[in-house]
Image (cartoon, rainbow over all chains, first blue to last red; front, top):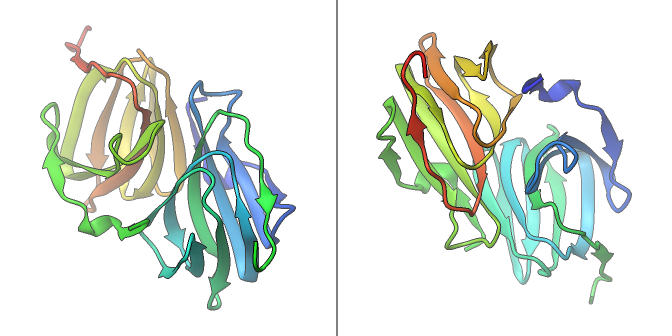
Length: 120
Length: 120
């Protein structure tokens, strides 16, 4: 079926984060070049500073978060577009009382996630 | 700058469509593997039946539309996920009084769009 409600897709907890779940909306088994995922971060949730070996193209759907990308810290909200190049350290902290929800597209390449220390 | 509001990105009319504009939120000059675009179709707008040589991974942000994918016709709305394989005929018709807005991710490969006749 080529159309599905995002809410119908199962979610799984993100191991590296707190209060954060991930849905694979269109996965590497369904499409040849890249995967479309949705992240839902509950109020108070976060993802620690980390790197990936693949880039991220992201679009904020709902809620607000502080995010760190390299040396920059930015507060983002609905309809903000975020690009995180491969290898650049980044982190997320949900803000406010609503879940922070965003789409994240990654290439269908092997990814390695490395959690960094505060000084990492 | 790794973060930008989608509304800050210029839009251009989609030649094959009516009442439809496209924004390239993250383009092939900015990211290596795929491009993130947003389409905004005004009430009454459409895109005729056509094929592309690249696949589409789409996410509906706002509004409603009837879309045709191959032999199927589906009405879609917010938070619906749509996958259109390369080469499969598809079309869009905005429904209702609100603009129909969706994200569309494509690989950074050459694309050829072919508009099909009613019987094409």
